Length: 204
Image 1 (cartoon, rainbow, N blue to C red):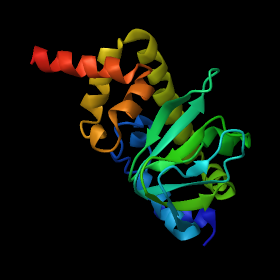
Image 2 (image 1 turned 90 degrees about the vertical axis):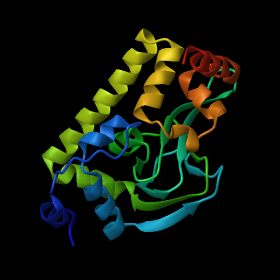
Image 3 (image 1 turned 90 degrees about the horizontal axis):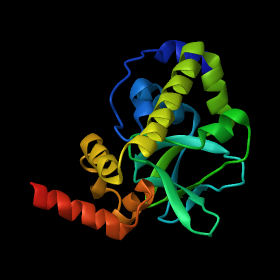
């Protein structure tokens, strides 16, 4: 089946809540993307620590996670790895910027558990986005809103407030990632995060 025909048949736009961490995925039809992957892609397994894509390389594929989790990471000027995002089960994974702009990836995407992904070629992802203006615009607008909100929170909320926001949005997140990984994402030390959690227990 051609991509345009696939979109016409599956164009439901039920915009379901699937990932409170990557909030841009709340506003897109994840079932459409999953069905597309199942029809045009293949199931791949990634062991913990294995790369989905590497910084400096073109992101050659994207996919729908059926098991496990990934971290988006960068290396700072001191050579330290910093976590800038996560992708969890039942959500999409891939470097959207690299794929859409046909540019090299600015992040590593690394499995932080044994993971399974229904992957599709990056070219197919671009064709899907270009096949229907509603899909392309909806994806871009929601991604921009998510990134812009995170940027504002970084400058307007304290580390404690950002931690509370994540726990409110994703109460089960610490079942999937470690405190050290969450601390890296919050741009604080694990010790400081432990102090925040201890303070919150005292305040209860």
